[in-house]
Image 1 (cartoon, helix red, strand yellow):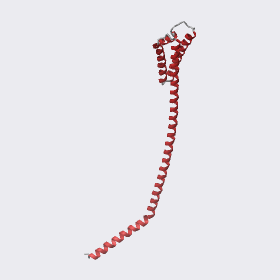
Image 2 (image 1 turned 90 degrees about the horizontal axis):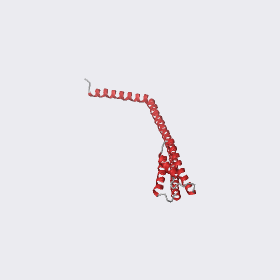
Image 3 (image 1 turned 90 degrees about the vertical axis):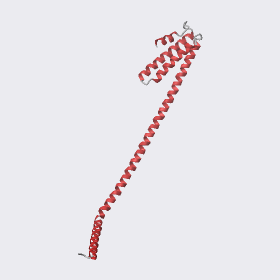
Image 4 (image 1 turned 120 degrees about the vertical axis):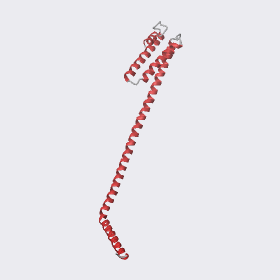
Amino acid sequence: MFSAKQQFLRFWALWQQLYHERLQWQLSMQPSQAALKQQQVLAEQALAAELKKRSLQLEHELAMLNSTQDAQLTMLKTKCQQDINDYKQYLAALEQLKNAIQQSYTHLPAAVAFTIHHHAKHLLNTMWESTNYDERMRHELQLIRFMTTVHEDARLYASGKTAASLPENTLKLLEDL
């Protein structure tokens, strides 16, 4: 058989041949590997650029949404504030109407004046809480008709054009509603 030295030399030659083939393969594949690495770097750069672009787009869209929502919130707050002011003015007008009834009909029991005032407030609240436009307009017309009747009764009594000791048209309207 082969001696140990010959076996070692054959093994060494085989190992050198395999090592040389590996080096040759790496050398032949080096341009392909360099191209793949270059493509990988370019793909990573393109991906980073795309992510940055999308991030900027999202930031812009978020800023636009925030701006739109802030504007809508400001408009809603302004509208609510105006609604509150309008409601306060309605309540002040109803209070004046109650005072006019009490001053015109000094003999009228306070409970009747308060009932008339309470009914007017009920009409106002019903109108105010209506979400349907047609329903709101109907309630607003009822309130206007009621307030006009109360005011007219008080004016006629104060000017002496009626002999009735009670605001009869107002009370009749209360019965009808």
